[in-house]
Length: 586
Ligand code: ATP
Image 1 (spheres, helix red, strand yellow):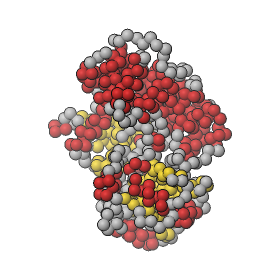
Image 2: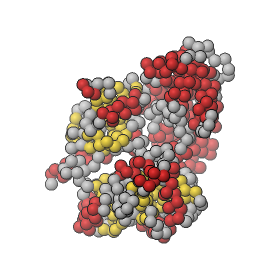
Image 3: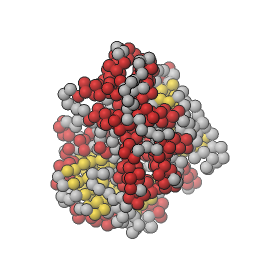
Image 4: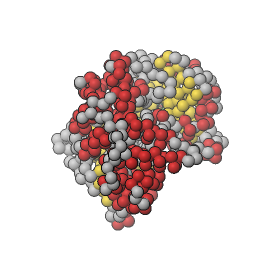
């Protein structure tokens, strides 16, 4: 079906919302993208993911619900109290707006065009300063007056930041491959371009206008973040040496916030691990980086909270105080940070992505001037277990979380957007428990009983299967939550509620409420076991059994820095299981 008008796009959203299979999801999307005007592709692709711009531009659609209620009231002539009441009853303002418009007169004006809606949403997102609240209300009301009920549902969800269809990047990439290259296997080519630019809409329009050639030659540019390379994990120092050719560079694993800084002349932009623009959180680092690195460059490092008096590293929780819209001078003084740089991807016009790690590290060493707040990640070379073990002890004693060991061989290039054995993380063993925590995606909730009535008492959690782009359940978890956590999760989950299992979730258990896979939380556990009730690696190691967790416990850490596709993967859990077995057998 052609997608020209917003009405047609809303119909596609509606279809996606009711599908139960990922393949159908891909086919529906491919169909819509194939028939779209290439000029509309950015609007369609961003809106599909509930956005108006790539994450790194930091333009967010999150109009407060109160304002949106006023806009719905203005457009439907219903009193705001009634709109609020209906929204509370439906648990969603979008559904309430849809119902209100169903009884209103049908719009007479020409239908809304996709791009027109997109531009208006962008205006709403960008409006700031005096009078901006009224402007947002007027803009949304203007759209709603011209919308059909179905369009209203999605317009309202979009502006309030609740349009989450659970369409992941991989699904969009596959749909584009099918639509424009006629073959889903071409996803790899598109993925590479995406890993280097982090902008799906750019990939789509370039493909539509210039064809595959243009994507084959895509180059990195400062100001366009690169999707980060990630580390594998190992269970022993011996394994690390084996995997990295008997010799590696062991760096401290700093426990702070990973960032990618882009320096262009006077301008410094800082991106988070999931490539959101977080420059405003680190005004002090901007200054420091500019002084320490007088170059055009893209560098990666960890921002770590430090003690203002001793300069010692502080736990990760402290750097999280910087996670706010306005970082005041009090916060800056109370929670000072230092940057430890561990990679450089671009220097004065040259991409270093294809250079081996030792060359990149050397370039970083040469480019960096000594600075109180910016230093190189501590690093030693090691070719024996004894040596690695001594470095590990030292890392822990200095307040690091462990080591990240880096392959020094000539093929150890920077693998954007990939988890690779060229980087291996090694953390402290938590007294016989699983050595590492897992970051799991919430895919459903079970109602609580007793004191927990009215909230979810436990959550259904899933790993991400990278091969199939599906979420596979691994455990039900009810431990480790404070009452405040549960209240907060209930609110967040209600916004993600579904009345059926999401097409990208494979589950055997039936929770009270399903959720669109969006929220990632950190969980610890005693061990990995088998279960007939969970789909993680189902049938892979044992027939009719999946992997599950014994004594799962929420650690208190919500991984808002991770997208659902950045959660612990099924393959990682399989490896963790095999490692656990080895340890037991020793
Ligand atoms: P974790 O939750 O264990 O921090 P992650 O999933 O966020 O892991 P991984 O790539 O698996 O990310 O682990 C490496 C992480 O360790 C990096 O994302 C980065 O934040 C952090 N880190 C700290 N020090 C270093 C270092 N010297 N080199 C690379 N990464 C480092």
